[in-house]
Image (cartoon, rainbow, N blue to C red; front, side, top):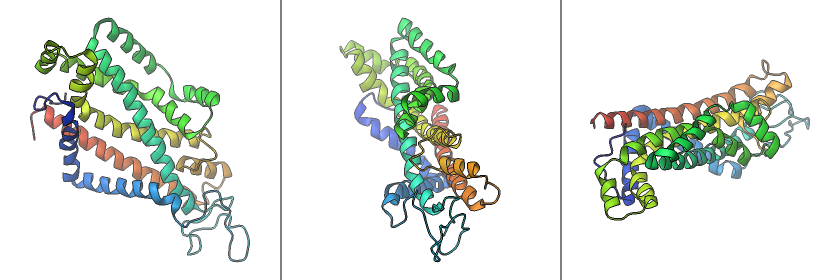
Length: 301
């Protein structure tokens, strides 16, 4: 349970709540390291496609004019090349933006759907709560990969479709925890005072309750980015990703499909390590935020 007693009920203080809650990440050694890594990833994701490097699906040639197939790392090809002669460095750099796009878009959708359903369900309670939580429970029963295959087969395998599929199947956890917090908050004095002053239900939910949910939203937003990136990589690895957009999952899918998994080590290690480091950094930040929430709930610093 997150301690929100000290916060006022005004939406204008949401930014202060977010900063107060997020600032301890920069005071933790591993948190600072993880944030530095994430900052580098975001920077590469933004400027990567504009760097003077070949395109991700551009064939490279050796100095003798031959296609540079499966060239190991060298001064000419810093991270080696793939079976088809693409540069591993180029594909890796372009994949930063793909992962960031899918991760952030998935997280925005997951949080938007989950928070709204949980907030309405927890605030109104009764039959509204029964119906919305019934839908949430039904969502828990949906198996991810079979549903993802069906939805991608219907709507296509573009990045936006993949992000939407991830959001449609993973909003349920956010809805559950948001509903629990809303159930607690609606009994607080500031909510009763707002009702007595004539505030509408919509204003109470989004102006008075929502700012107090900012710490919870921050935690699940970071976790949702992690889910989005991991699931995009998983879908791409099994061949359900966008074949026209390079990603670390697609790179691993192609090295596996080429049969060069054990020989072209550079083609395996680079996307695997880059993906792992990204996920690890996000988990460190999310866990630090979660620890902050636990300390606050116990009345600590």
